[in-house]
Length: 344
Image (cartoon, rainbow, N blue to C red; front, side, top):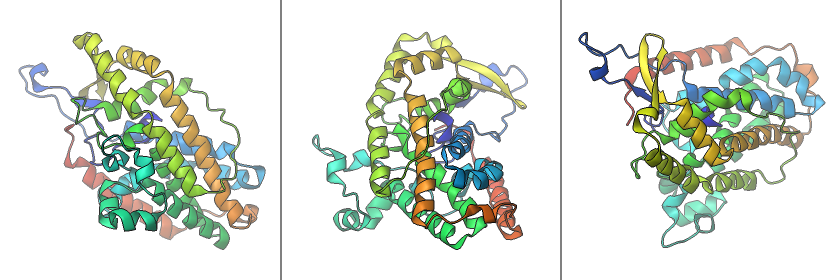
């Protein structure tokens, strides 16, 4: 999971597993050059989830998805690229569910699952302000279903890639709380630690045999259950890191790595290994759940579309129009990502 679900609300604010090496360590020549993060560890996990999810599909879908696996992998991160330039995108990646809980209330009993009921109770402005990921997953499922129905290759690829991203985000504990980067508890950087650095170090050791996707009879309930399961881990994510930081030698918590022309400070492998051990495999479990969840929603959208024959769509590449749209998104993203590199 880890790096997969990158950056909750601000472009580099929650990517704080990467800390810029201070100028004091740079010597007489001044600060070391800081290269904007073009590799974006947070993107790795999203891509891995989409890629592995392809292999959860039944034979009737597998051929088309395998043929397009590179597209589905690479464009798993498009929603994050849009969040810097498209109004209304950011809130699709999270829900601060604890905002709605007071005096020991269970927020999942306070917030109605159905959109119209939630709007009536809290207003749409409030819901948008604190995140809409479970509802947006349902919106994306319906878009993907319509794309299957119309046998529109461009939209199938686009929506399949993107819904994987939102499902992935819903499986991250820190995407379900106002304290999304530990900023309320003096733990800034924990978001990147959990979803980026730990995965970067351990991804090749994870077990990706997650089984086959299954039909989801109620997609909205599926999305809410994913959020609720993620939220159940928030206390452990925060408490264990705080306890480990108190016990861990401060000079061993971070290490330095060369990334391009920049020397950066990252959480050390020793700190990450111990954190992961104390989390008892939480990151890997949530990632596995996300993978099978993505495959299941792809499958569900296809079934609800009437199980169209995807074999007739093979050997049909994305249209020039779609490729142009994606190239423009990439150019816009490359422009906006350079606006900040300091972790908040």
